[in-house]
Length: 225
Image (cartoon, rainbow, N blue to C red; front, side, top):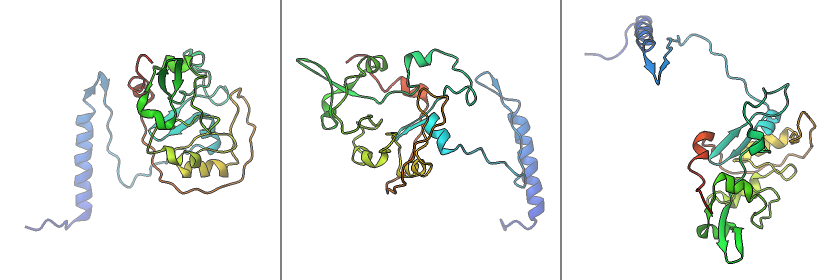
């Protein structure tokens, strides 16, 4: 018995029929109290590509790190709808602050240096906000999100824009940012001012695992310091 297809067009029609029947069956399902909508899509049907956001848009709305991607509205009403919660009162800068590892000493609570990571632990998000001025004596004026990630720490300097101090999870992202002339809106926002910087190339691995914000808020921080 030969397993080779001898009638390509008939094979395509059979596949389309099977796909249409499966779509009808799946469309009768309900998952998590939500109706399922399924439709067979022919391989010959053209699919529009998703809209690619500009580097300038990303600078305003994204903060990336090795294991987290934050996507947050800006405050420009011409760009984003208004916030539906009081998030700005909790996070004035809109984005989650960089995690800091704290160590307790006789004279108080301090931020652990990168090499002291094993002796400290992360506080809750509320503790992190309350202790915002307690930071490590880092050479970075703005603490990179991955400061306490041992596998990433050696590459941090190559992932920070030396003009606007935004941190990127890969050399490619930083290079795109620089090529766009380091266009970053201030957090007063409603402003499209740009800052110019020369392009610089870096070499490093590029990998961006994405986790949801909801999952991040729960497990990363402990309740006390």
